[in-house]
Amino acid sequence: MEWKEILSHVDHTLLKPEATWEQVRKILEEAIEYGCASACIPAAYGKQAVEFAAGRLPICTVIGFPNGYSTTAAKCFEAAAAVADGVEEIDMVINLGWVKDGLYPQVLEEIRRVKDACAGRVLKVIIETCLLTEEEKIRMCQVVGESGADYIKTSTGFSTGGATAEDVALLRRYSPPQVKVKAAGGISSKEDAQAFLALGADRLGTSRLVGLARQERGA
Image (tube, rainbow, N blue to C red; front, side):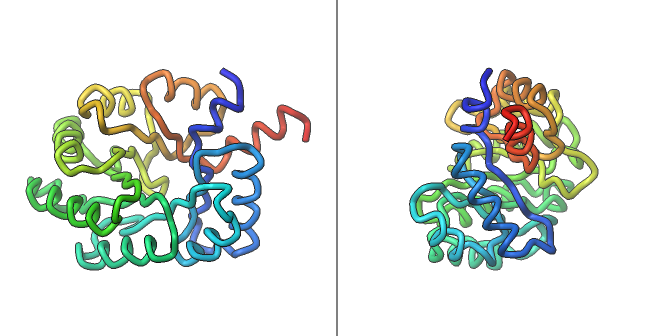
């Protein structure tokens, strides 16, 4: 698989807490140059990023990030604010404590409310696979499928682990066909990317692949 095809599935990502506008702008420039699916950046830079990209690149941001335990009202406010800024894709973190308590109807209702707040924009639901049991992951595939969200996503990249082949395969196996899979966290090589795409991932959240592609072409 060529870099061009791989990078067309990549959400080129910069979410470190100390990210500056200059660093975000560089990510945007790289994502545009290399034909990435989107650039995923902090919400505070959403409007600025949308104006900078000027239709050349979808902008993605995160809400309830990275822990997921802010209130549903807060997540909905974040999503609506991002939409108002022109952001086209939103990645939300679920309330993991609710999953551990078996409160799947509450998790489902929250995702549905956030989806409504997204006003037709793409919604990706981060379930933080490294913190869930296999049974919980399977249940979350069902919940996300019922919610109307567009993607189920493995990881924030800020917890104890990132995407694994086993988790990507599980999410693809148990998610309904209309729900796509995003693998994120720890994707650090072309081989990783190819493996996750072969297992059924449609998006890859990573900060590293553009740099690797640049090195390979000697730029």
